[in-house]
Length: 419
Image (cartoon, rainbow, N blue to C red; front, side):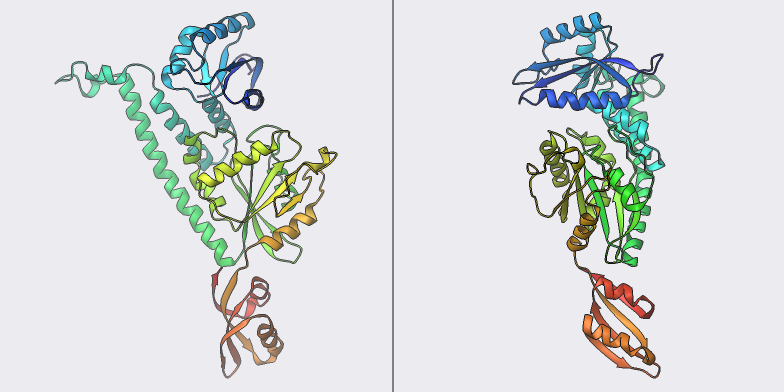
């Protein structure tokens, strides 16, 4: 799955796409950034404009021969196609071109393999790679497995291809088992956060939109920030104190991208659940890019596919690079910021306060008689359900908001949270 290593660590790559809707140039721009992130040098780009994909070679045999001549003339050692290819397409293209062929999905998986640092992240990437690789094992596996077909042809006599398939399926089973354990730990951590009462806010957005820069600014962290795609894979959570004193948990998540591989979404499902269970989403958008609308739609499409129905603040980032913001859609609620320059951060914090779903706590307080001011305050700020006067204290059962709940924490006896 890794890109082939050469002496200086870089490969000479030709990029190829089939353009059916006049978005080929923009798509290849992104593919070039992916290639750069993976460590390749793009020496040529080829766009084939046609209405259908060729089932045998993706671009058609004539275009494949044209790519062959270009690869030979430019001394290319890698051809990267902008869509996911079948095993047959890869084999046919390599037979014609004579140069190694990979597709967009393999390229993205290669980048993820380099970027994953945590044990969970590495397992998730390996799972996605194996799921991608399994249907692409080359050869005639089914045909070979039927040869002989009797006593003496099974066991040690099975084909290498089927051995590979068996090993991959076994490894997939093992990884899925390990990730279930990781998911249980993540669920337990999420439950502990809920019990403490911290709302969670998740940063989502297209890769390289500036989520990690914003995370570092809001939390005084030092999460890796690079001008490369997918700099952040492992979700990071930090505490943030809002202007009104309320504390929240801010979570940075993996960036989305156009044509995000399905196997990758499936493998990272437990990580992406941080988005599903968050109280509020900050959709960070690089407003300085001409393609920002297309990127926004890609993120919205992925969120829809995950069944995410959460309140969202659109955060237009990198406005320091713009002369005007009038062309940016006013999708309420929205804010304009520059995470790199620290512009608009107060407005963002206020927007978070205003758009967090109101959480009501049903709580029982035990209040000593000498603290009657607290009793008066709870009467003013909450809804009293029951009161009982004991020998040394007043027992109040009430419905209160988050601020009152946290303010009188030391008097709490029991509590239940609900939205």
